[in-house]
Image 1 (cartoon, rainbow over the protein chains, first blue to last red):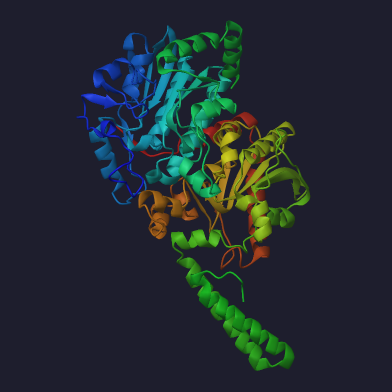
Image 2 (image 1 turned 30 degrees about the vertical axis):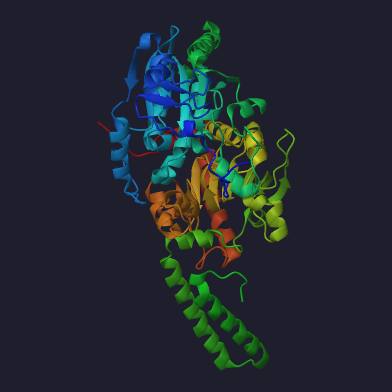
Length: 296
Length: 320
């Protein structure tokens, strides 16, 4: 029998889990609570060595992971957001942008680059969640559109790594129209018979899911990533029921026919490289596509 | 008195009721003095309507756009078009009641009509899921658009939705994928597409049938990436800032046009579409005919190029 009985429920964290870790040196896996050094985590591509939890990484890490010898040429690197609507909520939008740029050392929520993956020429667009939740505003839409233009012009494969909470509210309808713009460009890419591989990572929701993220010839997903149109909280409030375990996770989407393959981060490059090889345009198709472009 | 009264329309509704009463009296007495009084009151009514409607705030326009007496898609179909044949189903197992569509004639000219549909009472509102479509709605819409392309007929879409349905099954069946596919396919559809926001234009749920050569908004409607209420709840973490959010989002027809995000505005009768249905139908019909006429002789490839070009230029950013 216990001498002191806890009256209220709720404090269940064991002492070991509560231990605080200084930032930057150690990383604790949010899934299995394993502690590893940041260096170890980095060497393992941001994946927990014990349980395989895929932690969020940024565009720089993905570019280094995917491009041969880590060599790539960044496209439209000097583009940044304007404030067309003079949007102010609890903070002015330009102040939010400056703060995000300072803390992330990024210009906006996507970077695009051209290079080779396993010898195949490709344009990669990669979103950064740390920049205002990876939200899609005009810069994200424009950089992805120009990336697709570049792929069409140079006959390259297109890869978009999505990681976003959705549209950027501070750009309102400008942000909404980026969905139409990027999807239209992907239609042109498809007409040029060039491959598009969409990589869905944690999290991919809202307007990004309802545009380029779901339009891949092949949709790849990292394990256990949250992927959906509506956020789980909104769905829960709407249907007034608890959501089933694993709802809107990669494995759930695979089961429902919405993604093709779940790929561990370590296997991302060989998988993409293999796919680019399979989907390389044959000479005949290339000729046809060229004729079509010439006619247009 | 009208069942549904917006707070800023109270004076209008009171005066309307007074006029109705006077008219009853007039019918009984046939008095010239009463007739004169009625005429005076009607003049005053027009004046109040003009004043109220000239100065509507963003949030007030959102309220007008949701007025339950506004015409919905099937009302426009009934009063503007003839020979409507509703077509059902996505051919993948479902038929969404929140999006309707089918062949119809616009002054003898066959067109494919597609639109969100809301209900008019508790029962039909539920039946129509409040105009919130599931993936099958977008898939049905795409099937009909492809059919229009096959037979070389223009597509008209009517947008009126508080958003695509955020439900469990909607996610299972790929809500995001269904909308995304429509955006891509509409961009390259080889027939003219005219889209009209007739009420609410909420986010991806609206855009899913909204990629057109002409995107028009009726005068008292809204179109944006999120509703003012949800915007308030996310950015301010409460529902009280919806008025501020409505202004900040620049979601009204005039602001959307000024920002180059739509192609035109369809005027509404004085006092809004709910005040005079017949006049509303006339105004909408005239605009639809005008735009289709402008588009019908453009070569299909040129049409697609112009459409993609238009959306490609949307966005504000800086370089350097």
